[in-house]
Image (cartoon, rainbow, N blue to C red; front, side, top):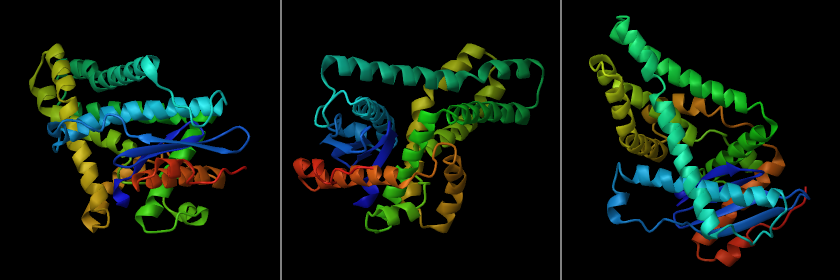
Length: 308
């Protein structure tokens, strides 16, 4: 089913994944497209980890590890240090993946707790509740928006954002029942309702709402920070389900309206790709689809090597 595919931009490429396999396609310095395809790791989780509102938390951690694995492979391809069939693995890879996940979670916790200090000053100054809630939301949005706008000015990040747009366009074309050609993919939208950017900003809004009671009624800073960290996985699980429903019922007028603010945030992390980047996204998606249809070997040859 087309709605089971997702992806991520990597260095000079795109990772696409289905329920059981993922593929990464990256453009070599000489213009060729290198492709690798594997079974999705960490997919055989216990049944309780796949329950609604829990699957999102475990899925996010797994996606972070898979994304890091794909980024490392694409980086090595870009540097032409390994053959396209090689795969980073072993104990070193496990350490790198584990460290990246821990660092990402630490940064997420820092970002989540950042507004609590100015909130404490505002409470001590006697600000009304609505102003404290608005300040909490504003600090979070300004911080993350400013960060994204700043890094987008970097050339390599800008290209990653282009590949992000190419990834969305390919999946949108597939879900619309279009043939995966450069022309069809180019015409598709670079915005998608299941995007991680929408997830991030939706999580901000949910967290502000969830913390509003504690921010107003609890005067102990360390307790509010502890609560903020504690509700993070809960809010992540809820937001995951919201995005999942948004993607499933994207053609419903009411759902489309509610999803619009989340789609707008993707203008921060996507850019219009060129045709060569679209070719890479198509190659990755075709490889993932071929693997899901039962042939990893076929997946690795799903797109012919192309030169730009």
